[in-house]
Length: 107
Image (cartoon, rainbow, N blue to C red; front, top):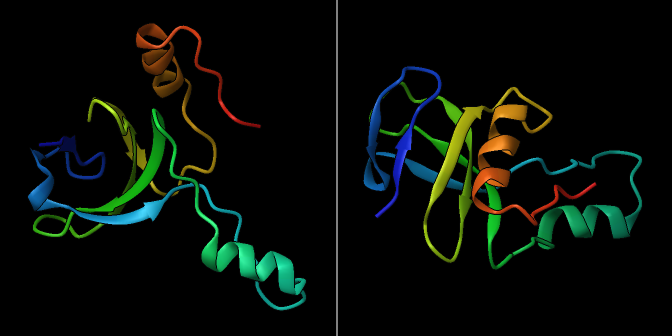
């Protein structure tokens, strides 16, 4: 079971207290985008084996959205940060690199 900490209110709980919201850091496309860009935004998601960045909502707490970095193989959580953050924070990158030295963030 995942243990997540909401960066908004500071509460740590099991994944049942939170609601998953899919992949984090998606580039959104809207009016004026090509059909291919809009199709990819709606339907194309990565499903990596290893480090993954996801959106979560503190469903039974403050109700706010946040991002979590975790490993899909081991369920290890590297850290959480607010959803308003568009770049992966350096402390999260450092936490991942300390446990997965050969990991590199995608461009």
